[in-house]
Length: 85
Figure 1 (cartoon, helix red, strand yellow):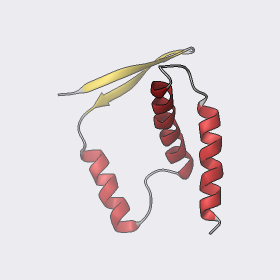
Figure 2: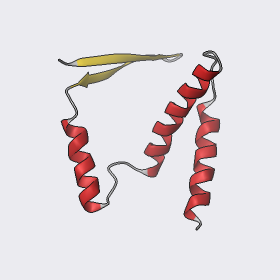
Figure 3: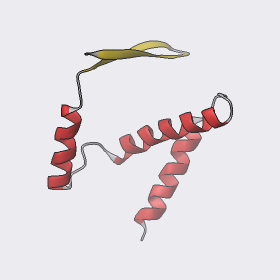
């Protein structure tokens, strides 16, 4: 079964593509575990986690909009602090 989705914002909608299964994800996970080379940049990781954090915050506040830019800035500051050890 293939599934997909469309994301909407104030700028319109964007089709997110189809989902064909977890095999591509697993290939990248195994490659990462074998090489230690992450499949995406730290900035991409922060953006993904900020999106998830923003969704969690919005839900906890009853669905109000949250500022992802603030979440990203806080995550970058925390990442920078962690790298300083």
